[in-house]
Length: 224
Image 1 (cartoon, rainbow, N blue to C red):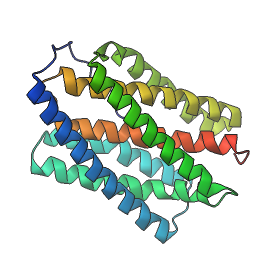
Image 2 (cartoon, rainbow, N blue to C red):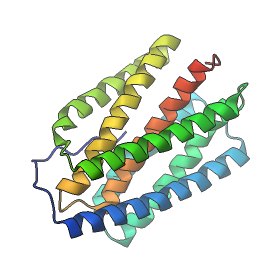
Image 3 (tube, one colour):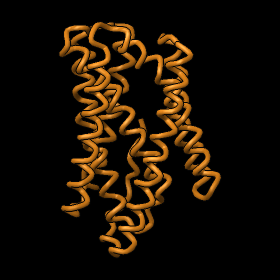
Image 4 (cartoon, one colour):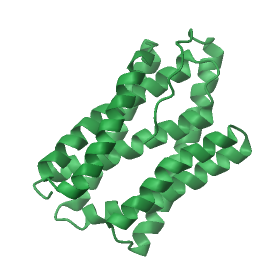
């Protein structure tokens, strides 16, 4: 889960800069999602199992990858690292997807989670782009909320309370929706926004959103 960058409010960039940043970011994001899908497909074909150890490995890669990419800052190396990271994230997430697919009605759970993720992302991004509203004021709240969610997830590993898991997922979904608005707003209001870094943040938002929607749809289907 990537933390939002807290920076002073910046006036809206020139329309040409906004359009170029949005175009580059969304093109790169679509390619990154395709690479992640390939990684997930390879993982599903390999039949990897989901376990606590796999979750730890996934979290190390998921959290550590953005720091490595940000260290490179920009250029071809950052783009290649982004593709490598998204592909690995898809591969490591495949055991979780496979676990839901193995449930009765699992295909519907995964499809509903994917479809809802796509609809929410398109709707929220479109709203931020069309309205041109500045959502930077949400940064502090979203960052604090993510810390609480991470701590709750770790605690529930030991408590193993199903209802708490559902509550955590519901809160996480709302936070990711807020982060999509926040990050899209940054591309509009920050003329120096790096498309690669924005893609990393948006991809992280979508991954977390999808994983928690899986949990919610599983609960709603009665298979949790």
